[in-house]
Picture 1 (tube, rainbow, N blue to C red):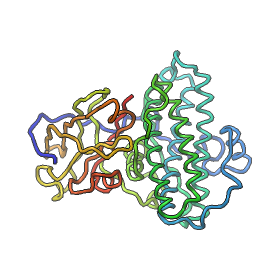
Picture 2: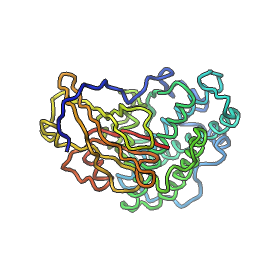
Picture 3: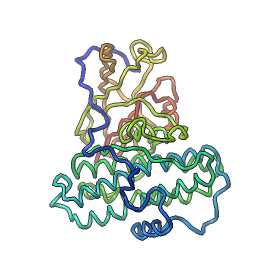
Picture 4: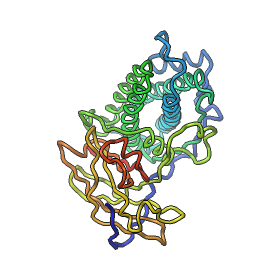
Length: 368
């Protein structure tokens, strides 16, 4: 349980970085192909650029898929629209010769060719999900928002691409599991194909950062609510999404990871989150002992953190936590770790239980 120990207040470090470019919108057809609703000839050009097509000729999925499966498809479309905006902006910054997005140690021609294909592949992911929604969901397709581009240079962009791809890879595990539970197994093969494709992408991003291509033997699990929260907290301009209300998922409070340059070693990490405007909820208890900080890493049982100190600053409406990051080269902490502040009364033995109890998160930590 968290319990109060008086400490100096740590300065709040916003999870979302300041954008290196104006907010991005698809409204003026920046891609030049009417994405996300290209005409037939434009779709053919996207498929050529992507080196492959939208699935065609396979047996049709059950009609209609279950309501929860439609929620998963809505999340996939929501995420893919953001990814298209990210890779389009990154590619344009590289092609413009912006010095911050050049790197003499890399083959920039090869990088441009790769990102050109990846951009088109993400377009097809979004179009494919929205096509299914147009066919089966009375709410229609997910409409694009306006987006932030929260990086200033190429290496930060590659790091961000790797991190959000890790979250996607964890979340698609959740999506495939839920589809199987709901009897929508006809969609799982397509989801698994995207898992493989995103894994190929991430191995490339990791190699460009001097890391081994594959981070872990079993990638860290995530959930739809964690992914939806991360997207809304970091990349989406608030109030800019025309039909976000059709996505029946939670957006948690922001959990700031205030410690930077986290190393592959046992160390203390500082976190912070905001006290709600109505004050400390009863479920937290006055000293926040009703809360826990939990780590999710790989496919293992979530770990409740050893909290060394906590400061509750009611004047600043902020709670600051210092907790041990129990890194172990063989068992904990490599790849993506998801941190969450949760109700101590929840089931903290499973990823789903942690997500159900989460109040603030995800805090995203990347090692190696």
